[in-house]
Image (spheres, rainbow, N blue to C red):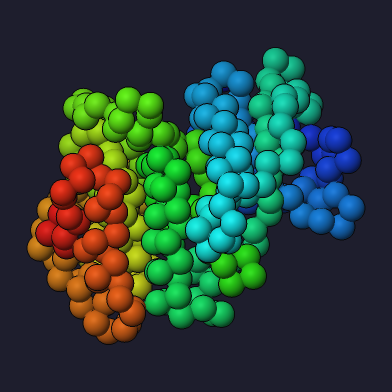
Length: 294
């Protein structure tokens, strides 16, 4: 059985542990997120095939780690706004034998970043997205899959979700060793050039990914966006999508477009933040992020 067929709506449990199925929120090759209701409250329930990757186990560990770190931080502005983990376990699929899922019951956020533009300025969204990454990095964790889909809005506050690829970048013995031949980490349209080149990603790569996310959000005519969307419409495979994005990213146009939007959108202090934000937590403490590293 192909992995795609593991996730069909008729397989999801209609009810479990008091949660009632409502709808599918998003789906990938090895996992799906559904909306469930319980006692009038909405929850996001993430299912992952037990035969797939271990990303859910990793995400569960990261969510618990983030929650524990948040408990130590008095200032709410310095905390990572991540979904709360209410319940996790395993469950058999309905109407089919030999398929079981791991699951997590999480906070449900109804508003995406794109929808958040109705109630928040682009400057507010951009600054909060960067601040959430800064808070995460202060916990010695890198997200490694920063993209628009992994930011959500609740009560005019940006929340960071999906920690299945996240990992610690600093341990008891210091920063993790730099590696090559790591494979591409992240998503085609937001992965940094380091990731495209299969190099170990670091906090600065999360920041570069949020910059690509902002360009994607701000510019409907962004050349990479236009070309990639056309490729997806004709069902281009991932290697071609990565190739398109890499070629566009190495051009000068990305930097020019980003700087132009900083000026046009009047994103207060964003350029200064991007230049100096992570100087204390990079692999090389003396390094500085500049626009040219896009």
